Amino acid sequence: MTAKKYLVIDLAYCHDCNNCFIACKDEHCLNGDRWLPYTDEQPRHGHRWMNIEKKERGQYPRISVTSLPKPCQHCADPKCKEAASGAVTVRGDGIVLLDSEKAKGRRDLVDSCPFGAIWYNEEKGVAQKCTFCAHILDGKADWGVSVALLPRCAHSCPTSSIAYYEMDAEAFGQLKAAEGLERYRPEESPDGQVWYKNLAKWTRHFIAGGLLKGGECAEGVTVALTGAGLPAQETNFFGDFCFDGLAPGTYTVVADGKDVTTVELEKSVNLGSIAI
Ligand code: SF4
Ligand code: SF4
Image (cartoon, rainbow, N blue to C red; front, side, top):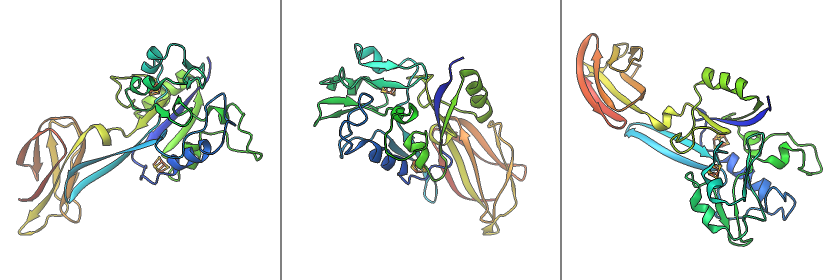
């Protein structure tokens, strides 16, 4: 079975430092034509081949902010390919490349990607996107020094939020199951080379609050959430609890065995302070 190349991005550890974005710029800007035919150089401004999106959930002061690094998803069945009339290739290792000659003048390709991963280079007159640093992985990066055979984003991440794997599809299937990996917006592209861990921090919701007893923070109270299938938890020093990873639905908060409140959950909610 042919080995494929994967990136796994863990949302639990990304802290929005932008090192991956900067490493991508370092690799692709001001380098002339040295990475052709993989890609022409990236313009200094505008393009975000590694784009980091942010989402805030909850209400002050019980808020969770998540960053989602979003390169081209290297889709197994790319929508950009349908529109590209030969300018897009899916390699045997899964990497999706835009042909630097055939993508000339193809401004229309920008709108063909449902993830906003294609950018138009006005200076060079060519559509461009993340190449998975295929020139490095193929051993064609002539930096004059030995470089790690990794995409630059994975190499530069200080928290190891971005991990690179080269393995066959069966082994990756086992990793996927063991780590609970998901595709971002699978309705657009269910399979490909970029996968996310802890994606629930982006796609799901939480119910949080704080319990008070006699006007004081109620530490160590057992809190359960009916309908969630999650284990009960104990309030912390501040009397706080938080159930995360919830789908929209109806949930009842139970503290010390008594119903406290019922929530019609549509998006993450801070219930505030609740006297028990
Ligand atoms: S380098 Fe790592 S921690 Fe920093 S923004 Fe990128 S993925 Fe997140
Ligand atoms: S994310 Fe967009 S540009 Fe990348 S392969 Fe999928 S459709 Fe094409």
